[in-house]
Structures are given as structure tokens and as C-alpha cells.
Length: 307
Image (tube, rainbow, N blue to C red; front, top):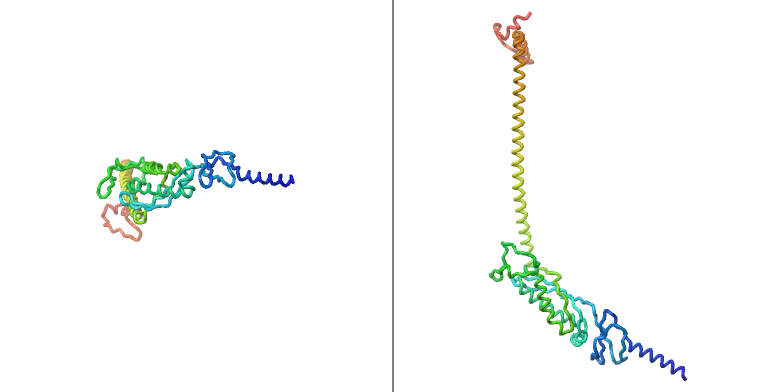
């Protein structure tokens, strides 16, 4: 009789132990509920005991969680429709309040949908498109101006995306503690124009690029004209210098030739006249040509007296 009772006790202890002992790890935070109602405070990490079959352990993430909203089409203050895709980081700061208000992470995600989407929509609709896409360090150019329904907006009143996101976080964070949630960060993942606005933006970008290209092209043409003009002047200077040197060389050669001729003439005038006349015969009488002169011509003198 003792053996079966002992076995029954062992089985009962195992069942009781499995139903009453539980472990909470470092990445979790837990609360114990009895018939659906929380009992006690938040359970710290470690080994703990609960009443089997009566109490349940509800575990919640202690780590930072991610929220991703659906892209929304929102009009900006200057009536430009854009798609805004937002994300956020949050954590469960009060498990007891979290359990009694939203119960699960799915419920928290749904509540964050309402809170963050509403705050983002208000923030985007209250700002210009240029403020949504520029950084806080952007400085508007002198020729830039922005208008809302015909009223010009002062550049000093414009902010960057960082300031807008900081305002969104501050406003959304104020609504989450009542659900046991701490909102850590809100960021805009992507801003995209709707088709109509996107077409106009692309056209403006193309026109701006064409304007820049025309400016570069004009500067290039100016530099080209300057380079060609400089090259033309240098070419003229080189040609002029070469022509001057040619004249100098030719003049020197002519002077030297004249001196040689004069020297030869002074040595033997008759021989010089005879030699020059023969050269003229050679140049004057061409192939198949005829030379007609009178017999008393000085040009015929040497032929006439030849023996």
C-alpha cells in the first residue's frame, strides 16, 4: 500500500511543481493574474512560485519594440499632397497599466496607430512642404520665397524636419503613459509626392538643371571664345615674327648676293657682262621657243662676234 501512495505523491508534486514554478528571463517583465485580475506587483527576473490552476503568468517584452504605420496621404499647409510613411520605437514602461488598458502588444500597436497617425497628420498639415523635406541647417537663398494662399511666409518662421519630428514626438509621447507605454522616438521613413505633385516637381527639377546647364554652357562658350582669341593673337604674333625674320634673312641674302655680284663685276667687267648675257640666253630661249632680235642689237653682240 505504501508504494502506490508514494508514487501518487511524487506525481502530485511534479504536477504541482510544473504548475506553480515559473521563470522570468532578463528580456521579460511579467505580472500574475488570478481569474483575470492582476495580483501583486511586477515580477522581477528569476524563479518564482504561483498557485497552480488558479493564477496565470502574463509576460511582456522588456526590450524596445517597433511600430510601423501605414503610409498616409496628407496635404501640407501649402496644399501639396504627399505620402508620409512613419515609424516609431516604444517600450512597455508599466506592465500592470499596460495589461489593464491594452492587454497585448497588438492592442498597443492599434492604439499607437491612432495616436501617432493623428499627431503626424496635424504636424504635416500645419507645415509647408519645404519644411518637411529640408534639414534644420538649410539656408534659403535670397531669391527663394514661399507663399500660403497668396501670403508670403517669412524665412525666419520656417523650420526643418528635425524640429517637426521633435514636436511630433513630444505631442505623441504625452498621450502614451496612460497605457503603460513609453514612446522613445518617431521618425519619417519616407516622403513621396502624389503623382500630380511629383510631375510638377520633376518638371521644376528638369528646368533647374537646364538652367544650370545653360549657365555652364554659356561660361564654357565664353572661355572658348577667350581661348580662341588668345590663340589667334599668339598665332598672329608668331606669324608676324616669322615674316619679320624672313624679310631679315631675305634682305641679308639679297645684300650678300648684290655684294658678290658687285665684287665680280669690279674684278672683270667684260667677263661679268659676257657671263650674265649667257645666263640670260639660257633663261630667255626656252625649249621649242624662238628669239627674234636685230643684228645690230647689243643682245646679239656676243653671238655675232663668236668665232
